[in-house]
Length: 303
Image 1 (cartoon, one colour):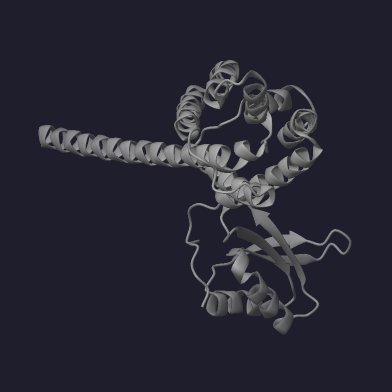
Image 2 (tube, rainbow, N blue to C red; image 1 turned 90 degrees about the vertical axis):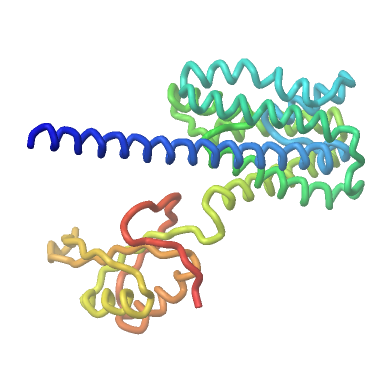
């Protein structure tokens, strides 16, 4: 009997390991595909839209564009070489997986830039190049970041500075990029520097959209005397689960029931309408959430 139980346990353990291996391989393949697609989009943005129109991006990419222009050497060389020191820092300070993913992404971006360099630009109209280049660049960078990598060494510097100072990652990146984008004015002219700022802003917004999606999640807190009615309405009219939390009023000391739930951006208006209909005096707070996993929450279309 004992031998049979041990044998069954070993079979289950082996099956579990095979399943785990399959999942790991699937995740690795998905990550590789997304990084490849992201690096390809960035290469297109640089060589088909931005660089031919003397519009630059921030960070190491922007420095590479400036150095390539001044030296006459291919952009792909500098995209790879200038990122190498930061890849080493990323490996030592952040982690092996991040460094390998970043190296793979940077190498693909450099190769893609070299291959696309002889291809003529789709437009020589600066504004069109700025808009479409910024969009393509933002989506590409967002896909790479979403897959656990990076395409720019300044992000690694910002992470390290953030660990040792009071400055946030965003503040460090902003300061570095203001300096780099400002340098474009002396190299390419101030009109191109202003176009570069527009492209950078568009790319920045598209990175957020790529990471969070158009259908971003929102957390909702509601305090109302009609908490049960509101909770039931959310469940039946909105189709979302709710959690009742016990709270206490800071001024009154009275016990409060707090309704907590997670919805999508598209459901926000309907949520507010439900609360307004049942209790116009209810306290309602809505906040953005970067990621939601587990439970019964699923993003879906609103009909």
